[in-house]
Every structure is written in structure tokens, then in C-alpha cells.
Length: 359
Image (tube, rainbow, N blue to C red; front, side):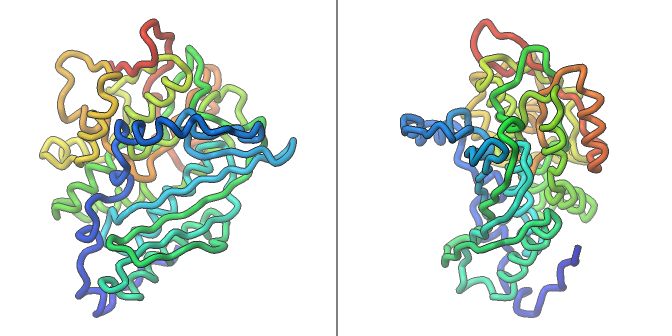
């Protein structure tokens, strides 16, 4: 991968990218409660039978059956800067957008760029580096950026429309978890905490490197995981945090999810930064949006709750699988370099509706 070029003299005179945005990365998402109110009437729209996955369970992407062998995956994701380096910003945004194709069990085939930039504030060189970062990730995913759209925007915005293909029988929705399934998380948590520390100038070089390594790692295990008979559901953990996306699994299946907090992997140094107050506003908005459906144990630390709801930009896959398939699931993750993938919970029956229980 081509490393970022040193900033030009013009670029050094420009404001920090993160200073131009009111929120960064997947922390820009509209709060889950507000989003639910906005979208409450859209599910009434008529849907064609070829639409295998739509908006009904807040899944990662739409899926449309083309024929007996192919279904088209379509998704889009974009946000404001989470880091100040333009090349890294482009890489993170592109990785995050493509992740939704992998989360449906598919392979990406092409992308379209979505670009909104304050052209009177940022130089063309800086904007070009953002786009170059996105292009580098698409090369890694072996797909072209085949077009896109640009606008003059008050805040910098970058992302992709990502398209992929999957066999209709291998589509993995977030709604098909079954009682007895184990939950496996592919990446450790803590990106939102690291980004909060970065914005306050409290993140050291090692912390930044860990953040970039996590957010630019493509979730390539997705298609192989989808091919395993014991894998029932897939999603990725992004702006609503582990709690929010686990709760989506529970709601889609009409079951409950139990998370074992002690088994949840964290990026190195994140717990200490969170304890020092480096948490995002999105974490609190997430809790306000879905906290009523989450049962925490008595005395559960405030810091742990912040990490549970921490918005993950380009987060890991969350897999719901049978205990018998667990070894194979972990082996697929390891083959793709995700050595830290871990069991974080299980799916259980619920007598009081979809719930998330933390132990």
C-alpha cells in the first residue's frame, strides 16, 4: 500500500480535518431513537419479491435477487473526518463502506465515490489525498471506483456506494440468529474512544497506529463465513456500538442476546482512556436510544457502559453461529489475520421480547 505523502506547505496552513466536522466517523450517525422515528413510516412501502433484504430489520445492505445464482448487494456509507490525515480518512471511510458487503456474505464488485468538500477551505491537494486513500482500499479489495458524485459542502464528507454479489442461498441477514448460537466478534472495541482522545490531542503515536490498523482492515472473512452451514446471522459493529448491533440481532430474531462483558476484546489502552473521560457524545446518544432494552448487572461500571455503546467506525463482524461450527468460524477469522476474534455472548430464548442482557 502506498504510504501517505508528506503534507504540502499549503496543506499545513489548512485547518485540521476533524476541526471542520461536528462529529467524526460512524459517530456522525443519527441517534438510534431519532432514526427510528424518522423511518417509522418507510416500512409501509411496497417491496418486490426479488428484494431479499430491505429496511425491515435495519440490516447492513439491501439485497436484490438477479437470478437463481446471483443476488446484488447495494449499500452506501459516508461520514465526516475521524482523523486529520486526509489519506487515512479516505482509507477508513472506504473500508467502512465496503464492510457492509462482506457483512451480507458477499464479495464487492465495484464502488462509486461520494464526495462533499468545503472547496474554499481545503486545497485540491488535500481533497485529492482523501480520494487517493479511498482508492487504495478499493485496490486492496480488488474493485474499481467506477464513478461517483461531488458537491461543495460546509463539512468534509467522504464515502462510497459499494456493490457486491452473493449467491441467494448464502445471504446472511442480521435477523436469523437461533437459540443456542454463540456470538463471535471479529475486531476489538474502542475506536470511538481513540478518536475522542485524538480530537483532544491525547492520543499517542502507538494509539493512533492501533486505531488506523483496526479501521482500515477489510472484513474479508465475510464470504467464507457465509458459506459455513453453522453460521446463521452476520452483521458488522459500527456506529451504534456492540450493544446496539447485538440488540438489532435480538430484535430481528425475536430473541434475547446475552453478552459476556469479560470476554469482549478491547483495543490496547482503550479502557484507560475511557476512564480518563475520553468518550464520544455518540456513546451517550446510543444509550439514550436503546438503553431501555438493555439489562446491565448491578454495579456495572460507567466506563464499561461507555465502551459497550462506543461507536465503532469500520468495526468488526459479529457472527451468530452454532457451537459445533465455532472452531471453523475462528479458523476462518485467523486465516484472514483476525487473530483476536473472540466469543462474546450467546443467543437465548426470551419471555419478555427482544432484549440484550449483559453479564
